[in-house]
Image (cartoon, rainbow, N blue to C red; front, top):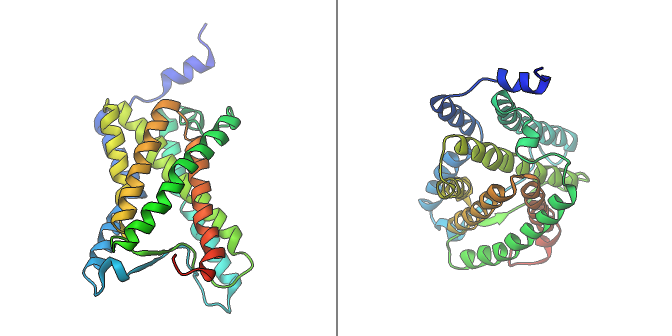
Length: 263
């Protein structure tokens, strides 16, 4: 007797390498690939302007409306965050078509919460402390723009929005850039080295707007995260680590930057 699970598995479509390559291009063109292209254009503009990287400032998480219209600003912030999740949903949907159970497939389920939290915290510590040192060094050498990680108006909802932005970044980059992309590249029989290098370069490139330091730091982070996924088969720890790092950067900047001059 054929079970329901066996029937569903045999009825799933089998995607050819050509279809998978086309699918990858489309997903990346709607998400991280587009960000990479814009980052290249952005740094070209920065490098060709007076002062170059040394005098440039890149603002993140800025206000979307005038200070006197905080509710409009909040609405636009929430809409932008929600729309940004569409490519994540698309990637998970595409994985479900031929692989089934996409959350379990990429390890973003609730089967190992303690491992995900502990592994994520360890990764955040391993990446975050050297990352701060790299940013300050690159900035001092004129190889990185000054990063204003939070430039919102003085509003009561600034911290919740920054936390949501951190979660959004973590889901977009880890689900699409690691869970989806690495899974598809493995289906295409790419070697682990090729997978790690390609993801590392992609992550570094879409952070290139920050400067050389941003590229190098995120490329290293990409290599570590890709290796972790290949070993653990889980994006859960990566999402936790990325969320911790971005919350520390965004909320930390909001609270600390007005009181220090070295950021």
